[in-house]
Image (cartoon, rainbow, N blue to C red; front, side):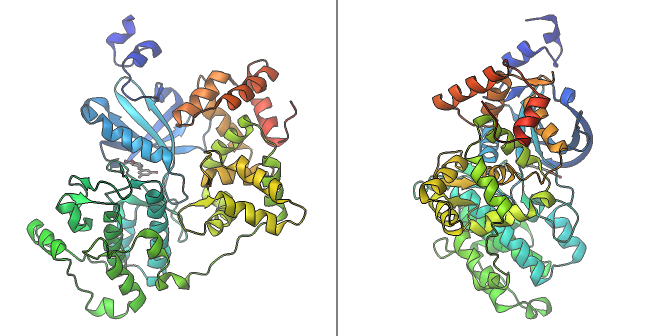
Length: 474
Ligand code: PIT
């Protein structure tokens, strides 16, 4: 050990030897980000804004967890990170990266500047049915996505839904996966007591529950949005007694103006019997949501062309576009997001590969079924038979050039971990590893070729060319 290890901010080697997470990047985050104000307190730590050095327009939220405090509960943090890396949905906060230094673990997260749903409800008293419907659909979609990936959140409450920006039509994002949990479908029920009481399902109080507990909480949130009240309130013992009875009222002035369809949905969610309670997919099919116009997917020439060209892209281009896509603000990808959601027939935030293939070959006469399948396979980066959101965006953006050039620089800096102005194969592979992405043998060889072509160092100019003149010649 060197002299620097006496201090907590040691050299890279000593930091590495103190690492407690498996594949996080050992880095002094203060070298990369300039920290700003504190914006919240997530589970186990404080959340601050930060600006990426060299990218003044890239603001992120950083949740820093003290290693001292997390000691003994490191598995909870690992599950939190694992959950965040698994999910990929427009209504779930993005985790960009995880760093570890001498004292802390830092989660680099998407920055939402519109405040939380709790503040909105308290400021407005209660929300209109139209607004509550729009927001509840997004909440259910985020939960359907979690559950389809075998993740249960366990701590849903209005404080954990953030608005991306202060606009009326802002996107809503689910945060705080500190209590999230992987569950095994149809197998063991989960045991332990978590969450905030008001929103907690009766079976959680008794310690044995499934992913259905999230649906109960969403029912309580919907109740709160429409009335500004809580279905179960009072002293702790009173709340627990009422939750256990499952009995609540929707009487009074406010409720007289609420539609029967909305009340039916609340009753379908705040339902004591888990087996009778709606799941997220079925809740989305309830009549209350029929008022929201269904969009049919718009495949314009530009989108179609981009998907077609993406098939010919190399691994480097695919992963770089994925990172770029993840950093684009909502307003830049609004139409692509809606195209994705309208293809998502099940409402679970991923598209079955065969659906995309069918759709592609039906809209484009000169595209054969095998060619359409080839496009789909190229987009299915997880080899899972399902297309995930950021991979779809990456393919849709590939030749579109609808994004501003600054985002190419942001993507480059993301891989340029040593900040030396070029990317090595190590930088690239390490970054993918941190994101939980495995590279197979074929991909390994593909990377060897790509880096060999650039003398083992990819400069920003070369990186930019690969993204802007997409069909990169070998
Ligand atoms: C923001 C703004 C903000 C808080 C957060 C993000 C927190 C995010 C978060 C916290 C977690 C977690 C995942 C995300 O597991 O005010 O952009 O504990």
